[in-house]
View 1 (spheres, rainbow, N blue to C red):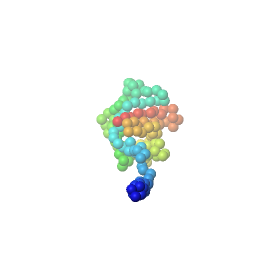
View 2 (cartoon, helix red, strand yellow):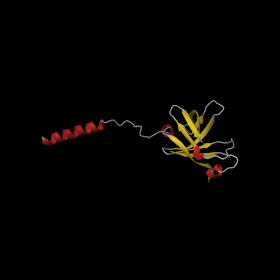
View 3 (cartoon, helix red, strand yellow):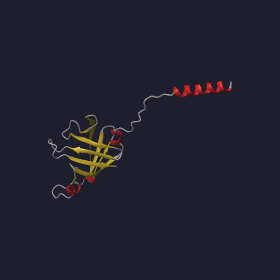
View 4 (cartoon, helix red, strand yellow):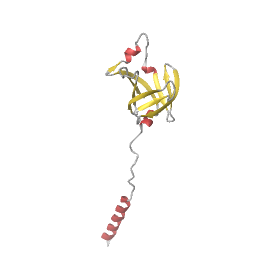
Length: 144
């Protein structure tokens, strides 16, 4: 009799645990949008191909550019704030090309497309196409 009660209990336990939902969870983690909009991105370096040119740009006599003074803040509503040397500007953004690019300021004279190379919780790298040939494409690397 005790064995039958134990067997009934084990069967009930098996039935209850097997009926637990096994729906597919959304455990894929944060999306690119979540990473991009999670905080401010601060400029770290500029690359041209395999060469880091951050210091060369910073020390250029005619057109000095210090990427470490550049920062972006993207929000989920599709707007951004860019700060450079204390000056701020804003605009709109959206992912395009299956989240492989960011279209900035769509439909304006300032429209540009950034090719996304990497977006994680701590890194954001993109190529800003300087010309249509791709020979002068610069990679900008940002961190939080």
